[in-house]
Length: 163
Image 1 (spheres, rainbow, N blue to C red):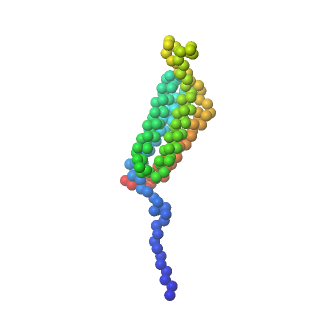
Image 2: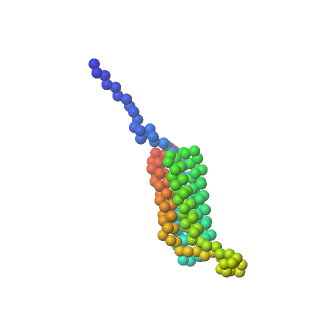
Image 3: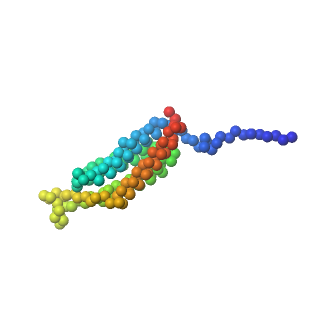
């Protein structure tokens, strides 16, 4: 006599599926839209503008870079103890990429003081800026890629999120 038994095993994909709260995904997407994407796009616009120069351009880029930094920290806080699988390492990558971008953009600005340089105006420091170099755009593009990877992660989890 031959006996066959069948066991109903759930697929590993179904067992590994984590239902992330939709609200958390919404908060991440909102920060990506309002802080990260707007900040990176804003940096691109400001540093390529022929109309802004010196201190005004530096101020505007610093505002956009602060938006990005805020967005990364906000998403880290929202993710907390790892609510969204795979987000923590993606945020580390984004943080590193945006730090590199900040350094590349910051290198475009030179502050000259009146002490020995002779370039300051009326005893006040002046800020001059250089045109973005290919390495500047590479750093910005890399940050964009890391941002897009987080969008892909969030979009992939959206169909299975828990209300």
